Image (cartoon, rainbow, N blue to C red; front, top):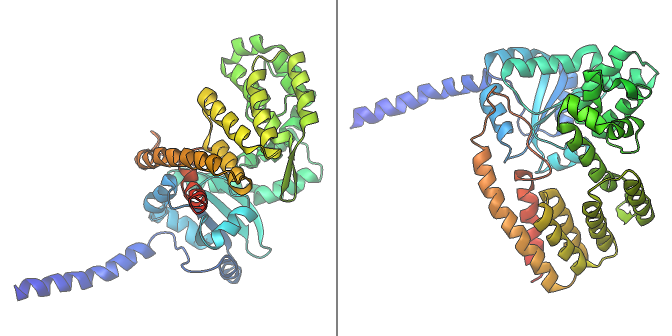
Length: 392
């Protein structure tokens, strides 16, 4: 027995250096440092700063840490070029970084010029080792997104350059900016969309305003476009019409928000003129927003339940409705109805987290997780539920 015990202890001692070496053989991430300290270390080392923005529940984040960053080929690429740090976007300084750098999906990888502190570029979503390295190389090409933005702002409108800029903006999830650049690029090219698939794909991916000339051209020829490009054309048109009010008629003034009812009324008339067939859906959305901003919480929640029953709300919708209700409503019965809704969603999300942890795409890629529904809302739902329960 004593001999066996000695052998076990000896084996454990021998294994410890091996374990340390295994950890050191992968990408080296700084531990227990602030963002400022990480930037300073990168500056002193004359390297770029690479920041892994993750959450505890994000399956692709875990897979990157487990399957990609430990690989020798990845370490050989990263360690000479970057000082690397990682921050949980829902804890400590990570919350501030998420807001400061508009991190909207996980994982997001930010790359900074440590000499200036400027963000050079970003990559959203993980991938297999070789593909991930290739994506970083492409995103850093020609000075990265920051350099492309400066050239565009200086007036560079060369077609090849603009397409590269659009691709870089899209890779970094800069939705508003990529939409504006695409709108300008497609101006005057509307009649080419039907025959030029590349131009049509730009339209499909990035045009978000139903007033845009390219959008109206496709709308007026939707049957021809559907015949050429498939049923996705009509889905694109419908989703753009539906999504426009929330982006446009919720007016923010600091922390205060208001609803532009006059603008919404004009938009409804516009929808009638173009003969859009889901006006009732959009009207219900606008009624929910109006009730919310008028602080008619009982009506708002009734309409929200009606919406969910008829159309199935996203967690982004449910959380925003219930969060605003928690802050402004003093009617206990209405508050408890909202709390019950959150409990039901949390139960469903727990099941989703369990399933997503097992999912991996067929090609081995690890896409970013949704920010409008599912696991992204677990922690915020739990925090909101505590506030409701504290005022029972």
